[in-house]
Length: 116
Image 1 (cartoon, helix red, strand yellow):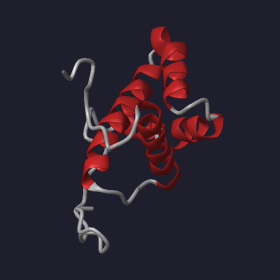
Image 2: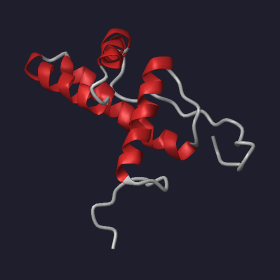
Image 3: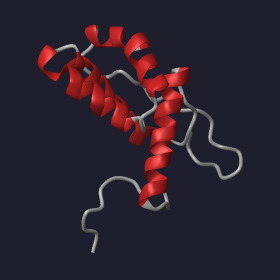
């Protein structure tokens, strides 16, 4: 039975999967883009959208502290990345309601021909 299993597993246990997603999130917010497989990109894209929604909530006074703490928790208590998120990406939430990321298909990976 598949109880309490949601999302992609990536042939990893729970902690490794969380660490993978967190590292991909960190790389995205550091460099503005990442190059990874299509399945990982789809998973990380939803997490990025959730973080941008929290940034939008952080601008409301009644959610300010809770939203900031939620972002800190999602990023694994990495204060440097959280500061960069609020400084660099906070201006993007004024222009859009959703759709902050875009998946661009690259050439398939040479080793195993997986979609990138």
